Image (tube, rainbow, N blue to C red; front, top):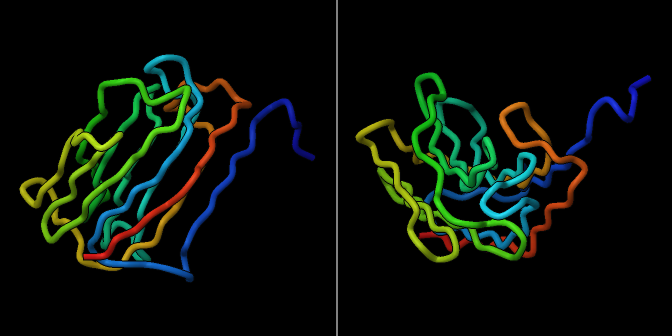
Length: 159
């Protein structure tokens, strides 16, 4: 029997087996728990393929160490390339997006470019990916559980 006070649960929504795409612009409108520029817990907005790390992973948003971070993880070992955006992305609705094109991924928070990753650091995939939205806790995050994260919409425009 699991003790309910020993850990917190999370939730995930995925399009695995239902919808996947190659190249395009993805935007998610989300409300993240936090205080000022510190993102609580471990919200995640990802794209993933069927054969990780060979076909990579695009992290549109991860709440890591309290930051709002973006990454490309790819072959051969899943190493991540990217960074964390400056700014406040908590306490209200914000958009998190990425434009995935051959050889590059460019990230946008609230319509502003916050970073990009190109083939100069790791081979950007051309394999189909599906979406994952996750709310959970992690040792790498600022845990203030229980909190609520909300997702209003997900939009995908395929190139």
